[in-house]
Figure 1 (cartoon, rainbow, N blue to C red):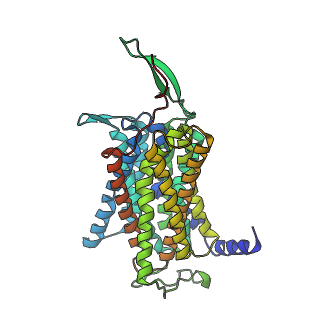
Figure 2: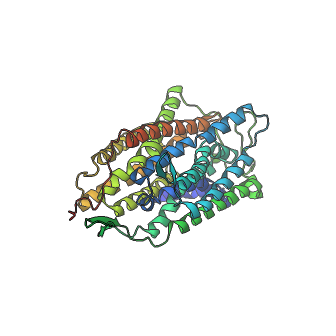
Length: 438
C-alpha cells in the first residue's frame, strides 16, 4: 500500500466513532442476512426439496412478493399522521430474527397444494425474512441519513456482509463433495436404477439457520444501540426542512461537512436510477433464478463454490469505498457493459443445460465459478457507486434509489419465473442419467 493510499485511509478513519461504525455495519448486516443465509443453503436444499432445480426461481419470486412490505410502508407514511421509522424497524428486525429461528426446525417440512408437493415451511418463513430485506431499501438506508455521511459506507459494507458472512459459514459447512451414483432396485422389480447419493456436510442446515437467527438478533441489538447510546446519538445530523446541516458534533472537521449545494442534472439523475434498476433486474431477479442451471451441470462442488465465493465478492467490492474517490458516471457505465456481457455468458450456459460447453473439464468449472465471482463483484461496486453519488442529495434520492431497486428486481423475477416454470427454457441435469441400467 503506497503512502497516498495510507494517508487517504488514515484520514477516513480519523474523527469518527468506530463503535458507531460497528453499529451501522451490524444494522446493515440485518438487511439481507436472512434471505442470503437461506440462499447459500441452496446447494444442499435443491437436492431434497420437491421443487428441485426450480427452487431458486420460486425463492426469487417470493422475495419480490415481499415488496408488499415497502408498498405498505410507503402508503403508511403517506396517509398516517403518526409515523416513526424507528419503531417500524424494531418490528421488522425482530420478525426476521424470530422467523429464522423457527425455520431452523421446520425448513424440511412439506405439504401438498393442488396435487403438488411444496416446501411450504421454507418458502413461507423466507417470505418473512424477505420482507426485512425489501423494506430495508426504503426504510433502513434512508434512516442512515440521520447520521453523518461517513457512516453510510459502514452501513453499505454491512449490507454487503449480509452475503459474505453466511457464505463463509457455508463454505466451512461444505456440501460433502459431488454425488455418487449408487445402484438400487424398486420393490417388486428386477430393474436396476442408479440414483445420486449426496455426501453429508460438516454440519446441518438446522445449525446454520440457528446461527443466522442469532446474527439477526445481534442486528436488532445494534439498531437499539444506534438509537440509545450517547456516542451514536452524538453522531447524528440535524434536518431543518429538507437540508442537511453540520453534524451535532461541532468539532467535526470540514472534510465531513455535507455540501448543501449538491447538484445533479435531471438526465444523469434519471440515468443512474435506470442503471440501478438494470443492475437489480440482473442481480435480484434474473441471475439467482438461473444459477442452478448454469452451475449444477459442472458439479455440486462447482455450484457450492459459485454460491459462496460470489456472495463474498460483492461486499469485498463494496469495501473499495473506503479507499477510492467518488466513482464517475462513465466508469459505472463501462462496468455495467462488462456486467451485461458476463451475465449473457452465464445465461447462455443455463440455456445449454444439461449439456453446457466444457462440462466435464476443470476449465468449464473454473470459468463458470470465475464468471459468477466477477458478476457479483461488479454488482456490488456499481450499487455502491450509484448510492454514493446520491448520498449528498438533500431530497429523496436514496428513496428513489430504493424504488428503482425494487422495480428492477420485480421485473427480472417475473420474467425469469415464467421462463423457468412455464416456458421450460431451462432443463435439469441428473449426474446418473448417462449410466446404463439393466
